Image (cartoon, rainbow over all chains, first blue to last red; front, side, top):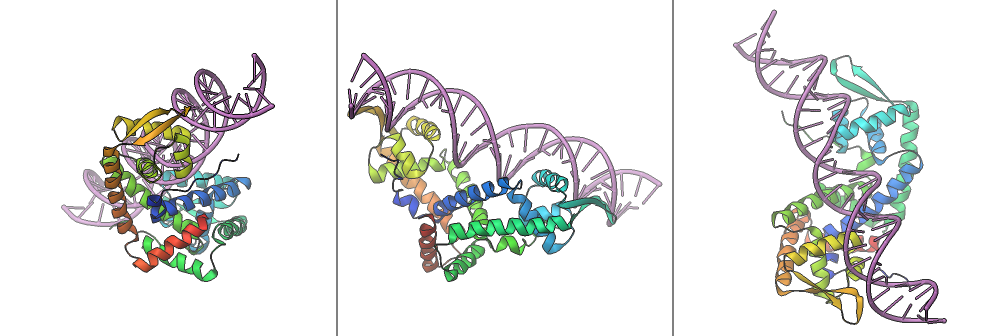
Length: 145
Length: 145
DNA sequence: AACCAACCTTGGGTGGACCAAGAGTAGCGT
DNA sequence: ACGCTACTCTTGGTCCACCCAAGGTTGGTT
């Protein structure tokens, strides 16, 4: 006698917010596991990706781009610095700022994390065709606006 | 000089999991605010909806249907009972169980919460056409599978 | 009777998101 | 030159959703 997953109420099943919440929770769990397994964190990937795409920048700027709070950013950068993936140096043009720079090992790390996370995308959204997946990305992007 | 939301890295923008996570966070916040404003909780709606659709049932059964943990279920039911929206009575056929029953005020409460939550769906997903919204629901439903 | 399974209850733990205050620096108007 | 405001980083918290574990009670089985 296994524990069967019962059918959810129609009033929940019909709400996009509920469906999205469940999907988000699932991917979040999978990504968290994958990141922990390699001593990383989902935020690490976001930060490294921002540095790779936009070059050296301040902590706040990265936070604005990725939607990460200042205090969390601080903790994440400490981890990334200790792992040698970034360097922190005071900005010579504005000594209030820490200029965060991506190191070469950091760039490789980013690529590796991207691969791992992309695999999870395939696991979760693999039931959709390529066309559908593009459609989904397009629609949610508009929703986020 | 406002704080402009910077563009997110393409490596994030292209990941369905990231888009969905952001959307989920936003709707979650809106719903939480709306529920708190009327002394409710998102779980309340889920529980009441399950009772309305499937009739009186045990706590575990509701939890399985809605994806709510036993301990959280306990707390939520205590709140709902105190507000008079449900009744707990030992199941005469199996005295291990608490049979949860929806009261008339509970049914009305559920309808009201449904309206509030549906409004938020419109706020968030209103940029999509009806057709797109159906498409989105269909695709995510398949993803959850 | 003995044993296992299911249910409710209680308590606690964890991680992500968020908030507030303080210290240092920059820019600006006066 | 001065004071004021704005910005940045750092530190130390809060809050909540989600999850886990143990104990006590009842039901079913052998």
